[in-house]
Length: 199
Image 1 (cartoon, one colour):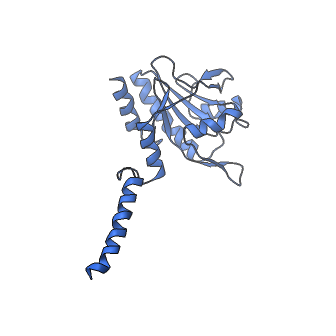
Image 2 (cartoon, one colour):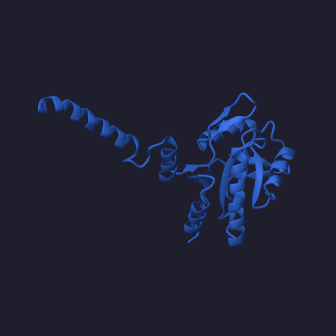
Image 3 (tube, one colour):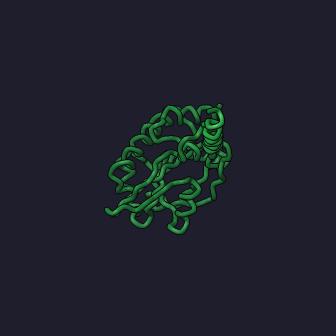
């Protein structure tokens, strides 16, 4: 009986060991969780790209001085997740304005051909993004693939002319590194992260 049980125990042990290794010691049970752990442990340098904002002006993606940049990826005619993410971004903006922290917020369009400055302005006005602390901007089309890859943003065209995509808030620290990822509604966690960074 014991001899029969040994192979099963061995297989189970190997399976548990593999699961433990694959989930980073049990910390990451999804690819999204694994991505977030990876970014915290090994922040990624962000290239010095220029984005075109909703007023048609060029602006840096990288932080200026001691500021931190919060980035979300959207497309302006998205009817669901982007609107929710925009509302969450607005709540973060409201909190940051009260605290006076050096933070810039950018809603980056991954649909730069259709999201013209006028279209981005419509989205910005709908969410009260004033172009100062929070603006809407687009990269050059040829720079978009590398940007999405850097931030692990998945964008899949759907049959209605829109996109399926993941949504998160990405932190670029004052050293110009992509160093943290949060759910769009993790407002308290984001504010705590910024507070810890400045203390």
